[in-house]
Length: 215
Image (cartoon, rainbow, N blue to C red):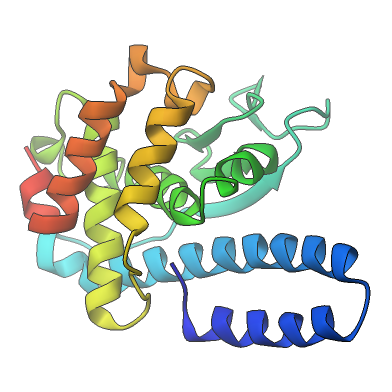
């Protein structure tokens, strides 16, 4: 998964890697790639809903606030309604209308590839959309609906040229969801659905768009 901006940043960092300390530069490259993927995901998903809100819903689109990364191992974590955000989790706080994620979850998922970074952000953004859209469109299984809508937003951003959907991204996401199933709050089958259910919902949104996700 990439954007033209991300590709430019990666090219600069590769030059730095060739010119000196390979090990340190490679670590910097990976960290910078992760941060760029996060920025690209936030921009692309927000841009999709901003551009296409009226295609699906009445009223005016309002983006959620992005608190962004926190360290889940630290006591200094953001709180939602007085409750601290969980380690290895990503969340949309409905009462305060913000999205946040544990950077350690992003780093762990990045070892599988960059796909799940986009899935995490598009999924949480979909919860913000669920909080804004007419109630009649809300599915009973809101987590699987968020997987579906997140994929639809990524596919739409790709069609718009905001995002480049690379060959193998869907397989990366599927492999990560299987690999992390049950290991983190964000991949807990009890409330988010099994890996197979999540992959199915994601593929529905990817192939058939937002309307296929709505109740």
